[in-house]
Image 1 (cartoon, helix red, strand yellow):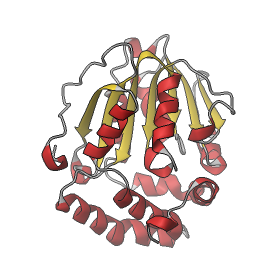
Image 2: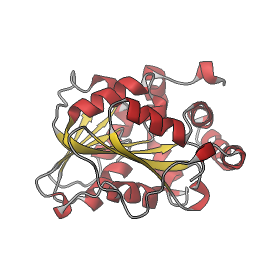
Image 3: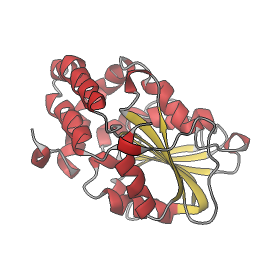
Image 4: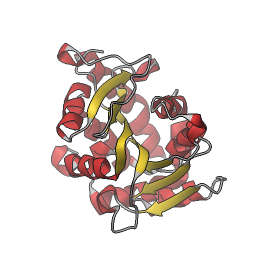
Length: 257
């Protein structure tokens, strides 16, 4: 698979449909996967346990990011959206409070699916590198946010150092691809490897978010083997500045954090 063969749109949704039954088992074997999602959700800095807030979980998958948002804001209304029917069915089958709802829709088709703002915050986990036009999706998200609403993008965005690519390649070839093939989902996990390498570095993605009209853009690292590989990118919609979390660090030269 090369960059021209990356799975997109219906082909990617179908691959996630096939992988849905085993997806939670694979993510559970990834050290820090759920803790990191919870950290990104906390970094939104949502007040009062989310009381009175309306949140969008964009690209919710089997519900791990939804659970992270719920942990950070248990009193909020949460709308969770995914393009994969199979992943969404796995998510919706879990136990959720009445304030959580699920919608089957691609990130590019929210309005057509009846997903409308305003939202006080959006969490997009492992989504933007998988869409054909991330700039259009960021524009749409900005339009869905209330003035000053907060965005957290939790994504594989390599830090820009050679060692980041080396670690990512080693983990994929040594663990992720063999596991994916064992479950019959080799194409999806080859896509994972290539889509991360093909996507923006952390610094490049932060610049993309700024160009989309967001302010107070910050890039925050995550601990463990994911350091330099997975980041939280925080931003605010026009209207006010988002607070900077205590562990925020700016991106500097060569993408180093």
